Picture (tube, rainbow, N blue to C red):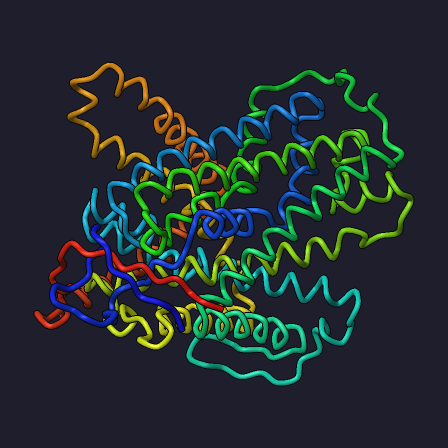
Length: 486
């Protein structure tokens, strides 16, 4: 299976434990693995559809490119801030552990609850259904929406169609891979990330070298640039960059986390910013902003203009991107529920790892099963719509927590206050995006807030039912390092 070595450090290994403990994740990830996780988690369908929204709001080519750069800089600001948070709190779980540390168990629990009911599970369901829909271009029966069987389970109406069953099979396939082999997970994730980056790079280089585009498309638009539209356009840009923090969820599994987490977040996010800037430059080279704004899939429209090909030219790239996203979220999400359960904030069974495989097997199964339910119930679109603002809210509150942690240093040091401008800029951007979401769709935001608040009774119930036996085990200063051999 692998080789176990013990060295000095601090990871939370119970004192006197000779074998690998059931509540400890294995340090099996290196910088390349964390970078691959970020690239796969961020690059999805959004970069092929969002540019149309941007072009409609900001029809000026230069302003469009500046938007993507500004969005990338904000993502980098978030990555730098999360790097600091992960060095201070080098544990699995992302926002859950940061919010728990800074604001208390209730805030952390609600963040984790949102990740479970929507953030990761809903996104996995959406990506799986999207993948099947694209695969339907080649295998129509697979994507059929013909009802095979339907049933009602409590308040949920489950509908089984070839499309929902195919999506469920994809979700379960990735869950099985991620449960049974840490080594295979790394191979799959790294391969998908490399394939995504290579395909995008090849598409762009071929487009510039051999495509029938025009640099005249970069000429300034005669339409005036409206600052409010520019700010509104930044919102979908930031959502397209979401996922840059993926490595924070697996911080505990990185070798020498305090040294590597910062480079992982910065390298991964920088690669994504570069790919996005390259693609958007290609889009403008291929088609004018006016034509781009009316496209459903800008990637396909650009390919048709560049190479004269038919529709669905970029479908294989979209499918690879969706596979990478599903795999990345099957890694990141369960680490949140695992961390919650290990801390005694969730059902204890989900806070254990498989002694044979070293994976949070039950937490992975939990997310997979809820994602399958969302697919068969057809509820993933609604739940993502309702809770979409919570993604930015959690990230913004987590980064604000860094300022809270550093408050004494900020009072004493001018240099610290200057450094704080980076996380402060990210927090302000998150506030603007969340407020905009609430003001533009208050009813939707209210339903989302109610879904999130629905976790409060569960939190109180689990808190009341917590016993001494469910408390976290004592820890000592040891570090586990597992190097998979395969």
